[in-house]
Structure formats: structure tokens, C-alpha cells
Image 1 (spheres, helix red, strand yellow):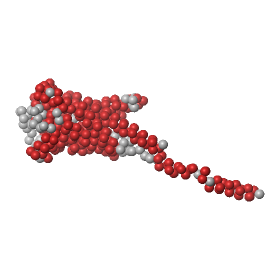
Image 2 (tube, one colour; image 1 turned 90 degrees about the vertical axis):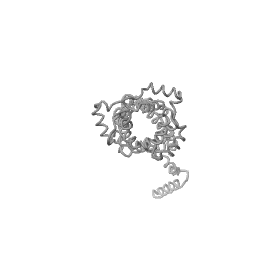
Image 3 (cartoon, helix red, strand yellow; image 1 turned 135 degrees about the horizontal axis):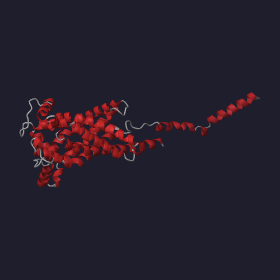
Image 4 (cartoon, one colour; image 1 turned 60 degrees about the vertical axis):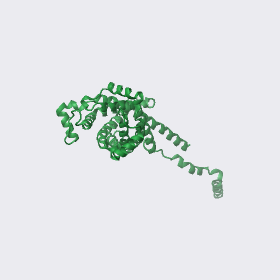
Length: 339
């Protein structure tokens, strides 16, 4: 009797498992891929999103600082020797007298065409290299510095031609009618090599600047976040702007000797300035130190800091804000897929 009862129970259980009403568990097979969908790697952003964020940041930074950049260019052009350079007031008066307020923005189209693509390359290369070189460690200044150097070499190759066009358009009484006219005339009269004449010098200048800049920025950002972790999300742009300003000012001050060397090389033989036999950085550094002492290597450090600090603050706060926007978009897509 017990055997018969057991057999009957087994048959009933078997019939229940064959009933489609008790088999909804198989529906999980269609749900499983949605639960396991991975977010994009590295800050939750895709490669193209780093490029867009960098492009926006670069254009905002350079457009905001363009009048200051124009004044700097005029100062360098009006004074043929760094020891007799024009003052800010002289440069501003010259621009306003010849072209009015619009003269402060002459060449801004070239800046927009160059800054957007160059900064897209700049930040995307930096983020990619930082991920590859840091080994998963956030506190890795060497990786941040090396990533910044790689980013500079790549972005300067994109930016240098338009920077040359921009500077020629910024000059007082520039002979060019606009970006296209400048490009056509330079190609016809000087050849394509003229667009990259300063590329090597630019990289030598910008590589150490960027290495210091990125290392200080990442360290300052991390330190500021540790001071008040609870308010980081509410004051996010303040953190990035402050860290950016600190990085820009520090990198500008630390690399001033190289900026002095570049200016001396550009002005050599003009207005009584020294002409260097080899043109090497070591030769110029030694000559300046012998003639003016080591203080001569820091000539112009204050205006350089005052320019780079706000520029870096604008750039980093804009870049991180754009990254935050894309992170929110990606989080929304991820949560929608899970649901």
C-alpha cells in the first residue's frame, strides 16, 4: 500500500512539472542578458564621449581667453626683444586704435577650428593612456605625467597649423582677410611646411608643461575630494576648477625657463638680442644664466601664471562637466536596460 501511494505521488508531481502553468522560470533566460550588460569602461564613458567632452572644453577655454591671447601676441610682436617688450596697456591701445573691440577677436575662427579637434585628441589620448599606464591605481603621478606627454605630442600635430594661422591673423594690420585667405596664401607662397615650422619647438615646450599639469591636477583633485567627501557631488565643478587653476599656475611657473628659452630663440639676432651658435636648449640656458643670472630664467613667470591659471580652470571644469553629463546619460541607458 505504501508503494502504491508513493508511485501515485510521483506521478502527480511529474504531471505538475509537465504543466506549462508551473514553468515560468524559463522566462529568466530572456532577462539574464539585460541584467549582465556591462557599462562602458573607464569612468563609464565611451571613447567618442571623451573626444566630445575634450572638444567642448577646448573651444570654451580658448574662446573665453582669446582676447588675452590676442594681447599677448600683440605684446610679442610689438617688442622685438624680450628685454624691451611692449606693455599690456600699449598692446590694448594699439588694438583698439586700429581695429576697435573687434580686433581682440580677430582670428577666433582659426582658434575654433583648431582647438576643438586638437582638444578632442588631447583628452581622449590622455584618458586612454592613463587607463593603460596606471595599472588600475588612481594615485599614479608618473602614469598621469606620461599620459599628458603622449596627449601633447598627438594634439599639437593637430593644433599647430591652425595656431600658426591664428597668430598671423592676430597681428596688427594683418595682410590676411580671413582663415581661408591665410591658408591659401601660405600654401602658395611658403608651402605646407610653414604650417609645421614650430611643431618641434611647441612639443619641447608643451611636453614638460603638460606632464607637470596633469600630475598636479590629478593630485589636487584627489586632495580636494578627500577634504569634504560628503559635498563632492554638490561642489564638483568647484573642485575641478580649483584643481585646474592650481595645475595651470604651477605648470606655467615650473616651465617658465623653457618659455624664456623659446622666446630667446625666436628673437635671437633682433634688437641686440644674443644670437646662439648651436640653438640648443642647453646653450641658451647657459648663456642666460651667465648674462642675467638664474633669475633671468624666470623672467615673465607672473603673467604666464595669470594666463594659464584661469584657462586651465575653465578647461577642466568644462571637461569634467561634460564627462558628468555623459556619465548620467550612460547610467540612464544602463538602468533602462536592466529594467
